[in-house]
Image (cartoon, rainbow, N blue to C red; front, side):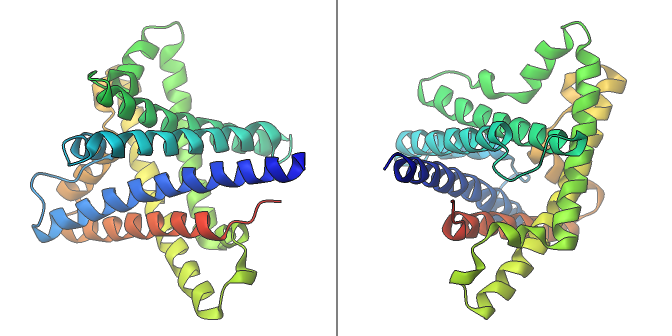
Length: 264
């Protein structure tokens, strides 16, 4: 009975966490694509800008609270994977690096959840602002070294996205037995394009972090919104549209994972 309850709890944490993450990426990718076709004002937006946008919509408070709960669930799931080694990464160097990446990504989504709740309570959202965190970090001894390690982590994350896209290992996370052949082909294609687009995103995030180190200026870090704006200015609307579609497909694939992942 305890194991059944535990499995149900893990399933709920996994489901709601991935549902929230998927919706964030769908919104980011959708608005970036709308920018290209001229249906959205301003430039492409990142997750924090999306959260501020939702704040002003009808029912925004309820939406932000629900989003924050989901993001905290995703944070909890990633930390669970890191601590318990749910995906059998192992305890060698590469395995520990991967598990550290789980914890780091979970923490970042948890910060976005904090940002959402801070806006609900009338704050400025500084608690979830990555630039503010970098300012505080760089004031610490060896802070610049830590930022450099974050840049290396972003490069490693880019490699992981490429590996998943190229080798299609993302399909191992799905219970393909529940799918029809057409569904499997569609989800494989969605995953390849989605993870492939994140290679570019993580490479540019690493570039921003390197600039922070070189200039010793946390303002050089721009986040996902800055990544999309840099793509728009440097490579043009067509390439931005390609990345936007990739992020849309990644968000959709995360929703597929929420639906088809079977936890033991």
